[in-house]
Image 1: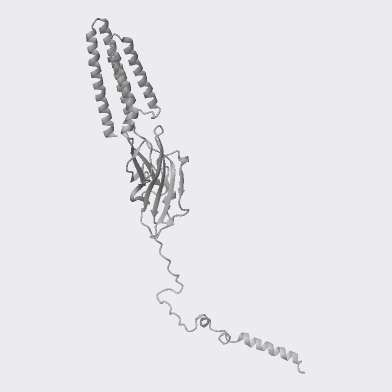
Image 2: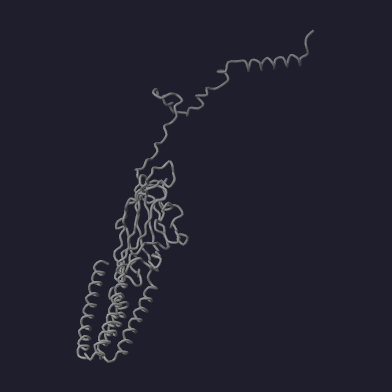
Amino acid sequence: MRPPISFRRWALVLAALLVFFVGEPSAREPDATAEAATPGAEAAPPDAGAPPDAAAPEQAEKTYDKPEKVTVGVYLNDIQAIDLKTHSYAVDAYVWFRWKNPDLDPATAMEFVNPYESWGHILTPNYEEPRVLANGDLYQVVRFTGRFSQKLPLYNYPFDKQTLTIGFEDSVEDGAGLVYVPDGAGVTVNPKMVLPGYEIDVPVLTLSSQTYPTNFGDADSPAASTYSRATVEIPIHRPPVAYATKLLLPVLCVIVCAALMFLLAPSYVDARVDVGITALLTIVALQMTFNQDVPDVGYLMLMDKIYLCAYLFVIAGLGIGVRSTRMFDAGKTAEAARLHQTSLSGLIAVWTLAMVVLVGQAMSAG
């Protein structure tokens, strides 16, 4: 009995499918290498010296010299409010940095070494991120305003010469990782800057190495650390003629008035004593006024020595007045008058010589 036609038809379809799936792969699949190759291009021969799975060589990492040289410069915009009592002064200035290593940022790592009232310091960078210059250097400018401190020696006040300083270091890198180098002259001054009561000399930028005899408690650090330090030194001095007039002229006037006691006759005892006592009290008042403007120090300033000489002049005059009064009471009127004349010339000569020596030494030493 013959099977139905539909059965024969399905049997043929199954046989064809079986032949299709069991046949040679090369007969039905194209060459994968041939598909990957670009038409018309020859395949590059494999490198016989490299392993088949070798990765491409990585780009060499750029290295920088150690320590990193950071170029610094300072522009002094203004100096205000020198306070002798607190040995402090306010500064408005710009500082700029140029460096190469992008892993460093000396502008944000800058730390002042002589601040006064650090909470009042304001640092404003010109750029949010360091700017890249045409030569590849990194560049940043920081404007800073605040008060700084420097112990001001007043031995020769008011003819003293002072040096205001602004010192800064890198708070991250020590001297082995970073050193400062000056940018040209180092310091530029605002040509319109005026410091009332003082004359400004030429400022300089000094670079040095500061060694701290401690590791600040870091057990992984050496016992002593050395950092590169930049210091702006600003020499100043007071106008000598103006301060001599303001401080020395009142004392000179008191001395001249005190000398009048020697021009009175020995018989005017009360008048001579009144002149001497008044001169003495005036000197005390002048010195008290002077001390309000200067700090308490453990040494004698030039003005203290001048006041001391004035005290001695007046006290010596009163002593001579007592002596001449006794001579007058003893009937030695002529001798008392000669004592007045001799004492007047001698005291004025001694006081003048003392002023010349003290002021001359102060002005030469500064």
